[in-house]
Length: 434
Image 1 (spheres, helix red, strand yellow):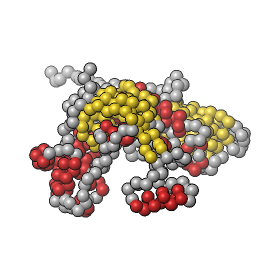
Image 2 (image 1 turned 90 degrees about the horizontal axis):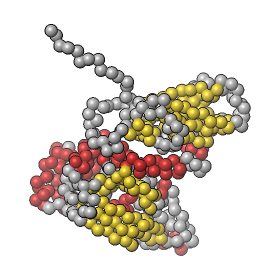
Image 3 (image 1 turned 30 degrees about the vertical axis):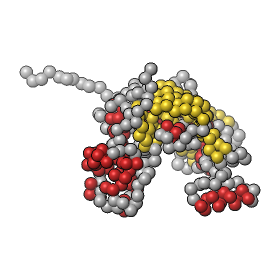
């Protein structure tokens, strides 16, 4: 079997609490904290964004990671922050060396890990194109040949001879990505660059990635844009705390990832139970929120037309004359409310201390593919008089996938646009005039 990339039993260890943070004042902070018996303030962040409080001075960022990639395969790599995704790509790109294990690569590798690395703020955009292109492995002749296309892609023709210290952050990122996007390697390693720039530029970036897939390049893509992962990648790797927990078809791996998020976020110590993340009077509190399919199975992934159920467990703090619930879905891109439904839970008096469950069902949800964060509000019957509790984006979002898992990615959406798929039928065609 022809192999483009093979990773065998890869381990990567970082030393914690040692000097070498890259800045003298941070090194002094670490040294002084240890002298006083205090915790090092420069310890790295762990999974979920919480500081890992180690007594030991070692951290295994990757453990027992193995991966085989065939030529032309597009592999997504996903996981929560701190799972080891970027570390894995840096090892493959030879930015850093593994502590243990072996990496075999066949072909030229180009990496889009940290867009803009090597840019010099005193140089012009033109000079930085040559500088950054050389750092990324392009020859001078190759940069000259592609220069006009790079500048046009970034949309910076008017400012290309201006020092980049005068660029806005968006202009800076557009130029950096434009250079990186014009590499021609056999293997392309990409780390979260699809979020660069504004919405129009992101669409252009996605189109570039789509063309790279169509050209048969081998691609490893790290991204939190799960719609792009689903559309671009036939296979996806899921990392959790440095270990591989799933490696297979993208649809199955995304379901595993969603379940992992669900376990992490909908449990006793999660944000759903943290009053600091909540709004409302607290007279009634949600104690759990679950997404279910039509058979009552927990899942976050649906196809357009599926039955979707949202199950809410709640606890009542004092006697009430009735309860109502409002459920809304936000756009994952703009966060605006795009659909909602209000249901009366009960018009009867509700006793203090009551613990109950309510289920809101959407029998046939007609939404375009995408991510839809859930907003839920429980209130009195009037709705506007008292919001007892609000859960807004604290659960994994509802995901609508395309019917075909390997559907070709089309950033322009063709004839399918908007949020909601409206039922319709075609009348005709009618015979032409006699």
